[in-house]
Length: 172
Image (cartoon, rainbow, N blue to C red; front, side, top):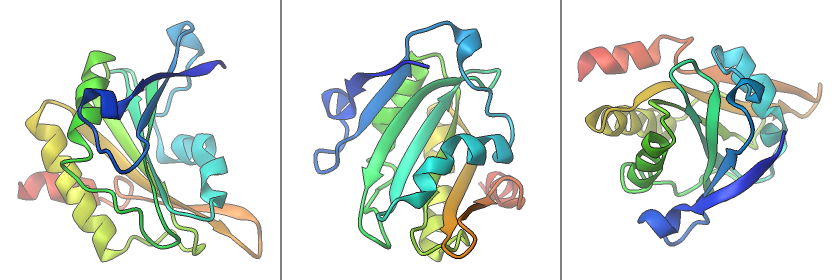
């Protein structure tokens, strides 16, 4: 699959401190992966679990959950990215809409090897959920990946599978 840089989000009003890039696939829609389960997302994004620094990715999806674009939203330190929602997220949502991608999935890694969400991860997810809804985009999942250093296998946590996204939607 050939992916190329479509736009630097700084060109559409994105954060200036992190390199926020949108990668897009210029080929046929049918050749793009379908990311309709957390396990499909985890498998497709597994290489990002091994990062030494936390990174936040946003996967823009078509209405049939085919990947339309991939944003590298933030690259950070060992335990944090410094990613800010909504200010860091709105420009990417706007570009997702331009790609005809009404759904997004947030993926980030935990270099610690433990995919359990932190309190900050929960707050970030709540803020992204509200921000996305306000401009007509649905956050369908937030998946945290971690590489188990002993077994060298990717572990994951899905906010959707755990029922947390549904609870967040009901409380808003």
